[in-house]
Amino acid sequence: DIQLTQSPSSVSASVGDRVTIACRASHHINIWLAWYQQKPGKAPKVLIYDASNLRSGVPSRFSGSGSGTVFTLTISSLQPEDFGTYYCQQANSFPLTFGGGTKVEIK
Amino acid sequence: EVQLVESGGGSVQPGGSLRLSCAASGFTFSNYWMHWVRQAPGKGLVWVSRISSDRKTISYADSVKGRFTISRDNAKNTLYLQMDNLRAEDTAVYYCARGTSTWWFDYWGQGTLLTVSS
Image (cartoon, rainbow over all chains, first blue to last red; front, side, top):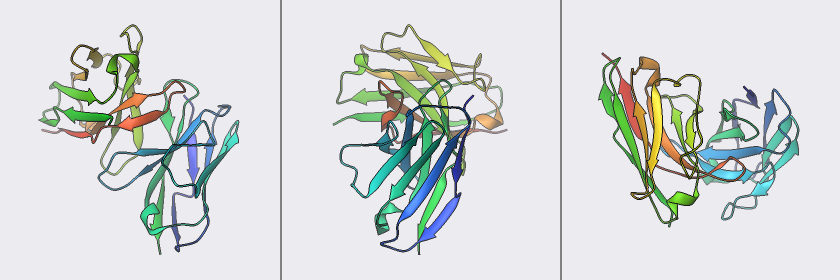
């Protein structure tokens, strides 16, 4: 199985800050990676797919990059509504797997 | 509007069984792969199972293989997860999710909670 390691596990940042979350895969997964945002008590919502494609309706302050084994999700200017936990998911092979999550808090 | 609505969760004793349902609307259900993903309380997301649009391809996570059965009724626009021989570690919110051609999930249900406890 492909393991995904996210870092940091949590981050506290101020409104307007740039936030970067990393996701490292245990095996090469090309560009087959998605990013999700989950708020407490809610289902996850996809932000980025195929490593760098912004899901329709997602604000442009979210961006994704990377290929192979190293990926990043960047929030260019953190907004109050961006709190929550962010997960990466590899879509290269089954079983599909998720990273452990990064909790984003607003200072 | 795409909607996925899970039901059937509840409390069951270890060794028991339960069937979850996911009612789909707002899209042509029979054209899409569907998945179950679960999340234990306070933990991360774990993929559980998938089924192809034509029901010919099915796969499971090792942790549920032999105990869980995924199925679908395209005439009723409904996805199912039959869960047998339940264990405490199956306690989780279970989400159904619509799959895409590159294996990410574009729509999720609100989830249904399964608690396995004596």
